[in-house]
Every structure is written in structure tokens, then in C-alpha cells.
Length: 400
Ligand code: CTP
Image (cartoon, rainbow, N blue to C red; front, side):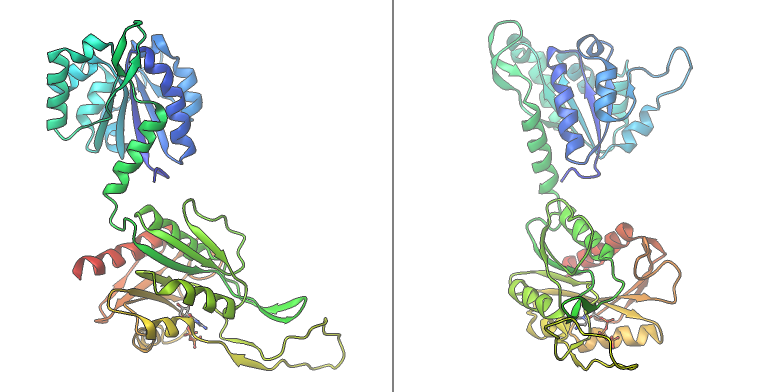
């Protein structure tokens, strides 16, 4: 959920500031990019060096560095953030935020932030209960800010009661749940295929292709990031499984067909980006074939077209997206495949386009929908292409 999210963490002067070290550690471990703003008081409790080391970014403490005059732009920080988290949020900072005061970088970044702001109060029991604090909290919530409520327990003063900052693990869980709620594909079941298939000739040889799986893995990652429960059926590929995605490894077209048939009926969206072999040897030699004649041929038979098979089984509640990799008359072949295989979208790759196809880090696609509306995209990284494909899928879902 937090993978690649930009988190701006504001740390106020409170003994709970020591917990921000663990919070940063957990955010970074979850894949988030973290930048930290410390108030002057907070740096009495925890050093910028600790938090800079953990966040892998310089820590911001003031508007400009006295020695160099380097300016810390609060507007840029506010715009950079996908989420701003203020933890611990002291009574003082909550009061300033509630009233639009900005006498330090943290409160200025808060006023500049366009993203959701979450705050985890930390203070002594009586400060927390005070009407002014409660009023400020209510006011902040009325502006759309989200409170991660303090817990009860022993406080630094020795008193017992409410006011303890939520534990870092709780803050992470809260953030993840909050992010999840807004995800457009929340809990939707998705099937993605990726990579090549290998068709065995004998125990040591196979017929394969150059597909690396990059495009399909990127699509699986993107759909997971949008909240989907993703099953990725992959042919042989050295790529690392994206976090949160369930991977099923297969080798041959037949294995991929069986795995797809087992998952398809429960999947609401299926994206078939695998480069499945169209032909497979009729007989697989049990022993290594020895070199003899000058010429040698292998008899092949057609594999089952997995996409076309799924297209026949598809119900109105399911979306099916296919790929077409072409070298000539690209658009017509793609449109033909869309119709013939009963698809909702087809993603066309032309090997004539620079930066498109196998083994590249980039891709260039054109997408056709059922009405044969055409959308042409620029050459982009495969992750950015995956986002474009996901957007087209979202458009279809919103239309129905
Ligand atoms: N596909 C499939 N099963 C196969 C062959 C292809 O599911 N046995 C799927 C691919 O995953 C892709 C789409 O069909 O989504 C188109 O693949 P492509 O190789 O471009 O086209 P083919 O239908 O195989 O036709 P041709 O090779 O003649 O272009």
C-alpha cells in the first residue's frame, strides 16, 4: 500500500519523538519515500542525524540553513507529499495548525500541503483533555484532517491515562487502511499473465521467446497498488514478484492454460500479457536428441489459444484485456484479435516502434476498446505504460 508513496513526516517536541525513528524505519521498509521536518523543540528529543539516516533523506529543521543560506521550500515539500503525517503532534502544533499560524517550517508545510494530513497527538493527560486542545482537534478534523487517536497508558509525567501517541505499527496500519479505502480496485480479483512459455523439445532444449515478463509484472504491480487482489501467472522469468502479488509459476503453454482456467471464473479483470507459444512439439523426446543428419525438423502442433478460450467463457461481469504484438498491418490485426477473442480492450505493441516490445525498459502502445476507439500513447517506462493500461480499465469499469 505504501510502496512508492511520498510521506512527509512532521515531528513535534514531545518525548514520543523517539518513536518517530521506528515509524520512519517501518515506512521505508514498506517502500515509502520519507522526508522529515523536525520542529526546533523536536530536535531536543531526537537528532536530525538519526532521522536523516533512517529516512535516507536530509531532515528539514528550518526555512534556510544559516551557514549556506540554502532555502527549504515548504511549498515544494507540501506538494511533494502524497500524505503528510504529523507524529507526534504536540498541543502547541495542533493549536497552530487549527488557527492557521505558521511560525516554523512544519506548520508552513502543513498550510501548503494539498494532500491528506494525518496527525497523531501526544501529550500529557490534562493537556489532552483541555477544552482548547479538544477544540483544536475538532477544528482540524472539520477541515478534513484525520486524527490517529492517542492511546491510554502510562505517560512520561508518571500519570496514567489518555495522551500516549499511537504506536508506530498502529500508525502504519491506520495509514494503510486509509489508503486502501480510496483505492478504485479495492478487493477486486485480478488475473495477469506474463513472460514467455517454454515448449520442451527434449530434456535439455525448448522453444521459447524473448519475453522478459517486465510488462506483465508492471501491470500486476500497478493493479495491486490500486487495491486489487492480483494473481500473476508467469512463464519462466527472473523478475522479482511485486509485493502483495500472488505468483503462480508455469513453464509451458499447456501449464499456463490450466492455471488460467483454474483462476479465470473468479477473476473480475484478466490481463493476458504473456507471450504464449503458438506451437509446441508433437512429441517430446525422453532423452537428449543426438546430433546426426545435416538437416533436422521438429513437428509442431498448435497450442490452445488461452485468450480466445477465456473470451468464450467470459461473462458480462468480467473484463478481458489482451495484447497484440505485430510487425505488419498492426492496427487491423489488433482490431481483428479484439473481435475474434471477445475482448474488452486490446493493447497493441508494434515491433516497428522504437522502444517497444521485448527486453526493453520502455514500451509504446495503442489501445482499442470494443467500439474500436483508439488511444495512442507515447513511449514510456513499462511502469508508466502499466498505469495507462490500468486507467483504461478504470474508465471501462466506471462506464458500466
Ligand atoms: N495468446 C494466448 N494463447 C496463445 C497465443 C496467444 O493467450 N496460445 C494471447 C497473448 O497472451 C496475447 C494475445 O493472445 O494477449 C495475442 O497474442 P499474439 O501472439 O499477438 O497473437 P496470436 O493470437 O498468437 O496471433 P499471431 O501469432 O498469428 O499474430
